[in-house]
Length: 178
Image 1 (cartoon, one colour):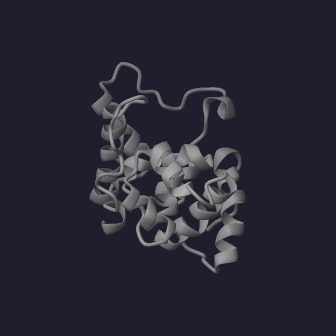
Image 2 (cartoon, one colour):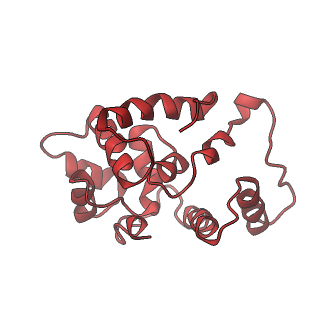
Image 3 (cartoon, helix red, strand yellow):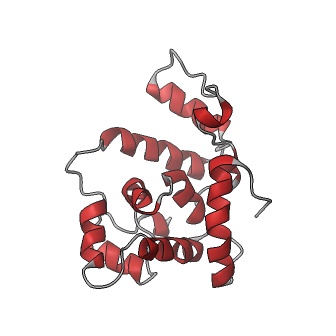
């Protein structure tokens, strides 16, 4: 890991580094995911009696997926990353980096409009598919695996809007099996 950048990525590193250090980890991957997500769930009040069911209710993951997550056996399917991230104040991209699916450099290219006072997207007038392809290029996702994960996540997010009855955890663990 490199020096912590500013903005959202800086916040990510400030939260993640101590937890990884405590776990004796230096690289991202499934063990890093568990070392960060589980303490943050506990800090957010998801510990003790009934916590697994509350996570199920809040994320839509299946009870089995939540159980395997709590036991550090399975990284949930990326479809659950939006809801899971909301519980622990992390973005889906941050969770993808933690799980080892994306490089940490992907976070450094992310800035909110308030951080840089202007849009760097520049995708006005493009179809959503063209904008997604350009975003993948801008983030440096040129290999087939990362590009496919990124575009698949965008497609999933377009299909599952807030309030949908979609059960995001039904495929549980597919992300860890890639």
